[in-house]
Structure formats: structure tokens, C-alpha cells
Length: 82
Image (cartoon, rainbow, N blue to C red; front, side, top):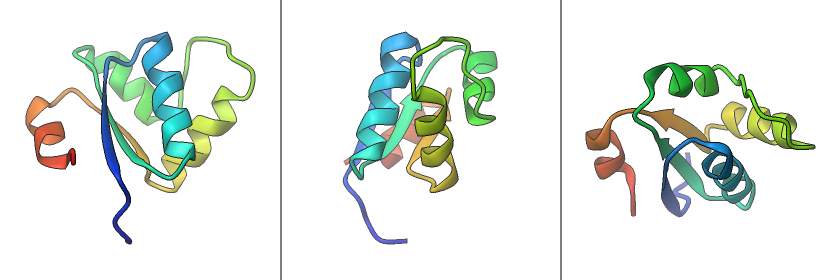
């Protein structure tokens, strides 16, 4: 896989998820960190609980191409980010 610019988003709330998905759609590899394991796991599975037009499709596409990931591990994002 080619190297893309990397970015970590802290928090997978309403703004964090939208920001992460949009930046990933611009070509960045994005890792989103949240302390809520249940929320992180839902997002990894492509399940969102908010409604924002086009967000589900944006999230699905970025999860499929590997440019958007979710975690609860500070260590994992520390090793990932540029």
C-alpha cells in the first residue's frame, strides 16, 4: 500500500467521525481514537448512530479502502501518526 499522509483524530463523537471521514476522503490515512470501546467497535463495523446526509456512504467507502480506522489504544495511534 502506498504511503499517504497520516492523521489522528481524537474523539469519535459527532464532529470527530465527520472530520475523520471527510479527511480520509481527501486521501489521508486517518486513525480515530476514542476511550469508549463499544463506540469504537460499532464504528469499525460501519455502524453510526447519528444522521448526517452522505456520512454512511463516506464512512463505508473509507473503511473498505483502509484509510479510516478506529481504536481505543493510545499506543497504536502514537506509532501510526506522522
